[in-house]
Image 1: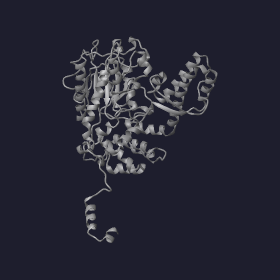
Image 2: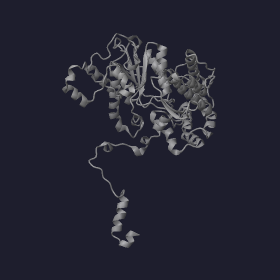
Image 3: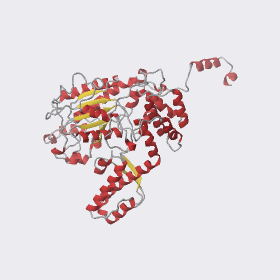
Image 4: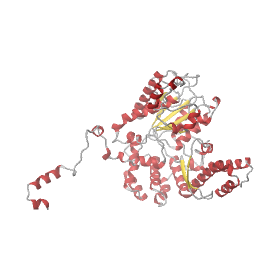
Length: 522
């Protein structure tokens, strides 16, 4: 778990050593116990994914929470999640007020469990959450899903740089360029990589053209082998940017235009989409578009219409040539509270009001802003409706206005001075069922725009568009996967048989026993 946070050498540099139980017992008995300065137990039941992103690494929580056939698994799962969230707060030395989205009873149960765990940690450590007085920190337990895609590690062929070979590169917090680029638009990434490489080349007195290619980097490596580490880093990001652009210029460009119009309900000029069917039909009929991309288009169309008739849904599935085993993804979205099948007699669900972001500069193909960003901003400005996002018991911003916030733990290997750590209030977001990269980006954007508050976001696991649809396609959503209490009970022994028996088969077998051998064998 510690290796996810930092390298073992970084821990040793700070004078921290991990100790197993057998080793601890040996230390107690030995003479070295007299010279050990201190021993501290650190509860870490989460994965630091990025500097402001965490994961509980529980991907099966999606099915346990949303499948109607797995309801018996929710209570033990919520106990586990609550403990993990509590260790996050304990690691950060935070004792936050807990809020939750009140539309779902499971949220209230999980929020109360988190509060109970935090109270237990607070009882053990009364100083938890206490430092200099600042505005109250908040934690919100939210039920929300969204989709966007990125990668934390890549494999690519190093053509143009020495021998052609497949190279795997880890993109982590040690890569300053990755930290700068990972949540930016592809257009900005291409410009930023080229500019950074040009600045580096100028500082080393290496000449580069206006647009650097992989071949140019290869030549630079031959001339300046002492800078192989730095140039390899630029090579990684230049290759990644070029690969993304190739995908974008293929089917992604056309797909994004339709997706953004459906998600926004308006086109790039701000005009309302009058005939969305005309926009989606060419995508559904295109054989070059993958099945999952077609499913996403159909789902976006359904969201825009706030539900469609079963007849229209069957026509869309037929036109898109979606296999039956994949079409269940669309129907399973209803388990997340999304209206899929509806008719004129049913009352349509009210969509949440969204903030107007006309003044914000956006690209035409990335106009959509995740709902979680509105929630983050309203929580910081204390504008969240307490009816929809209530606090647990009497804990609120009013009663905890003097609760303190400490500097963030972690990043020991960065050798930061005390002045470099953030000491302002925090907003900690937890999403049940998966967090997307577009939602992660919102945490950084809100933190940067606000200046005082730091937003941390996390979930049961990290999702991409494909992972999200695969979660919805999981067998746990089928009736055959229904779990009963008998299924969960421990079995004394495993039993087998020569064949599976039904009442009818048993009767037929008994009848054959009363017949002559030849007739029975036939």
